[in-house]
Length: 329
Image (cartoon, rainbow, N blue to C red; front, side):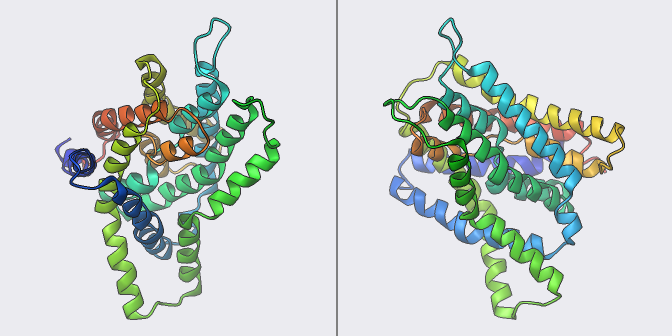
């Protein structure tokens, strides 16, 4: 456990630093979008580009592992919507908010936190399975949840676009994200056998090295900002159960589906399945609160789910890593 805490404590401490810096106005709120843009468009793509260029494509994209993770994400989404959707007795939330609650239940913070954390815990070989989860969440999980959100009645009674139009818009949004392109460009460079010129490689290395600390600091700042812009006070019963689904149900589903597929004869690398479990046990992605705000969902509820999952994950993630034998040899 000491070896695990030696990695997790600094990671979560940097998140706390970002939160406190924003809360105490040391970091102006107007600077938070700039930090987020630096991580999303410069630092993190360079880090993922380097991972993509450093390993064989088969290790980067494993269909069996992606299948396990994709199936578990779909089940988590449908389960969360089912248990949180407003019932006949009036309890629960509407379709749009059930969908965005499902998105934070199924979408871990793999980009900003998961890739560097799991690589720090398990080594560079963990990057392949984690990158597979990033691609799955960008293209499948987010598209599915936005489609469900748009399937419900609009607040003003206006008709929504068709499901296919919504899915296509979501996919276009995923394709505008620089992370998949950076992974693909790295893999293409590795397949070509070419090398980047020294100065270019050094710039990419410097930006990639900045990704981890700045991304973690930004998570904390974004969490504070999301709380400040929340438009409602959310009862504990509407956000804590969803955070617990994220931290407990999601990784257990990954394990269960992986074990079932292995029993059915599907080749399932043990190490890769462990990485998927740890990725699923990460807190919810912090930028979902911005997406919820854009679509007119209750971003206060989403922000509280993310905050609760982030606070609790320090304990739950560390215990899961210890239970899986990480750091014991």
